[in-house]
Length: 193
Ligand SMILES: CC(C)(COP(=O)(O)OP(=O)(O)OC[C@H]1O[C@@H](n2cnc3c(N)ncnc32)[C@H](O)[C@@H]1OP(=O)(O)O)[C@@H](O)C(=O)NCCC(=O)NCCS
Image (cartoon, rainbow, N blue to C red):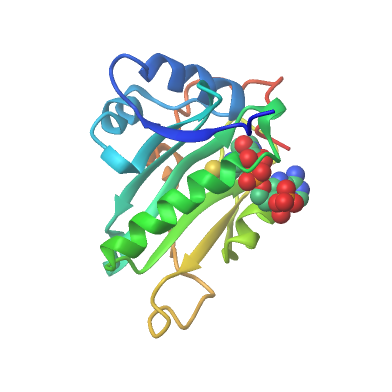
């Protein structure tokens, strides 16, 4: 038997609908039109994951220059439920880690996860991410509404104080990150593991 293949491919106008569909199934929040417009220009920072030529996962990131730092923000990284624990998430994170390593000029990588998303927290801890902050009421339409900020520090001498790397975002922090606060959540979704 041949081994399964896991490959990453570009997001293009031809497959952006697949990305939308995947995100709708995997995440309990919806992302606004701007999110998908920006993703088309994201180059290596937005990728679809293929398992034996089938789209089963995706990662979308952007560069964040707030707080006087240059950080990579993982907006979404997810894999369809039946394809989890096969290494697909790892391939996507490793792609992002090699991107920031090649660039050499990022202070950290960070993301938000719902506080009850234990699988994602375990997953990211494996790659050296730590919980550095918990934001109350980060999500508008889903429960629990609180989010952990997970961060992987890339500059050892900087960010010594890991207690509050993202100080007081505005109340609409989730909206700034492309989450469509007007859309209702999807109750049947896998993303809230
Ligand atoms: C988090 C997520 C992306 C992991 O993807 P995945 O393809 O299953 O991850 P991998 O197979 O590469 O797992 C790598 C390691 O992470 C850890 N891990 C992953 N899922 C885990 C779980 N449910 N429980 C405990 N550890 C887990 C394990 O150490 C695993 O290695 P192992 O399988 O050899 O034990 C996936 O669960 C997912 O899509 N979740 C929904 C979306 C989401 O919450 N994304 C995070 C916010 S952006």
